[in-house]
Length: 153
Image (cartoon, rainbow, N blue to C red; front, side):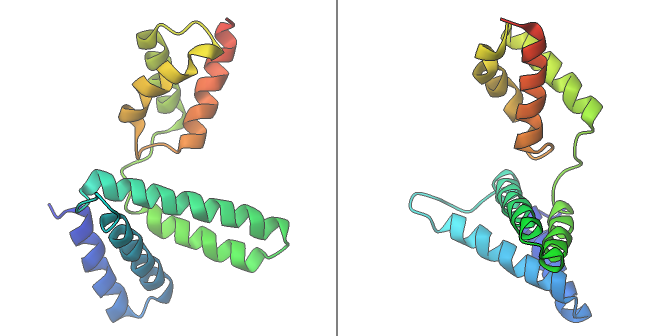
């Protein structure tokens, strides 16, 4: 099975041949972001987990842009960013459903023996390695906050 980097390279070539401008632009940007991460001081070549983090960061940037474009009334630009998000999500592992995320959070709360909202850090520390790349950070923290709020404390 090819690595994520090999898959991105192959898809970039396919996009060039097919003249798929959107995909081509997104993949070029993604390769650039990966390369930038790899040349940071003290960094080395990224493995699939590192590339997944870069993809997550790029998706987050686009979500922020979508919000700003919508506030400014630029639906055309917001739509383009949303299309780019779809392309990027194709390189992430299967995302957790809301039910699966809820179950993972419940399990992490039990393992961390959390009593209330002040234990959020411990729960996130337990939960993060399990859901990395499979759930958005914002969704994870909102679910943890909601469940901890129900516990009181």
